[in-house]
Amino acid sequence: MDDLMEAARDAMESSYAPYSEYRVGAAIETADGSVYTGCNIENANYSNSLHAEEVAIGSAVADGHREFERLAVTSAERDGVTPCGMCRQTLSEFCDASFRIYTDGDEAEEYTLGELLPTTISRSHLDR
Image (cartoon, rainbow, N blue to C red; front, top):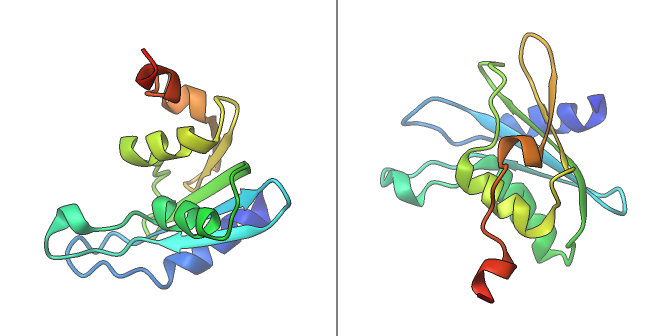
């Protein structure tokens, strides 16, 4: 987990957060061991801002990855930030409930996607 969190911290350094000044970095590991990183990218129109987790998973998916092992997320505040609801839902498109998520705070925490998003909208909902 340490290497993945370090990659998230490195990614955070590229964050563009002039409005909130809340810098975030994320690193996601694919099934084959590749690591993709992302940072938050703010926009004056907040709804167009990109979250670090979605940048990381988007880069991995764009490279053809569809299976993921784990995610690390950090902020400059080291406040134990977890992925937001939107990012959790995006993760659930590719990851099952046992997918591991690590946060960076006074003490590192480990969650599963199922703990953070116990009920998700899935493909099966669209088939009903």
